[in-house]
Length: 67
Image 1 (spheres, rainbow, N blue to C red):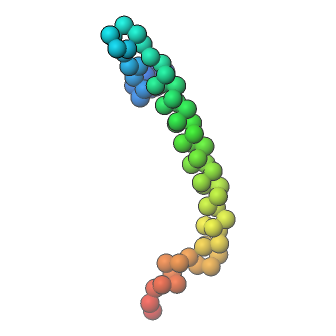
Image 2: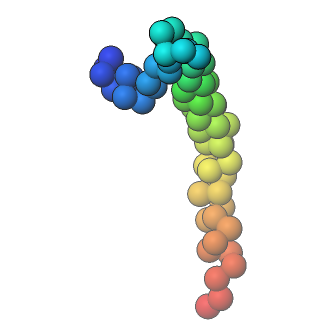
Image 3: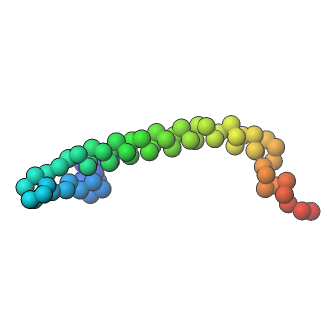
């Protein structure tokens, strides 16, 4: 993500009177994005063995089909 992408995605909000720039929201949103990506990676790794077992046994969808 480039700086311009980040500034569009996380605009800096002004303070109470419009003079102060707060970067706190940007920091928290950036941290949330990182945690979301880590969570997605962990979920993928955790589900891989179950996907492999499902493929090995033909999956649930094929066992419910009628001939």
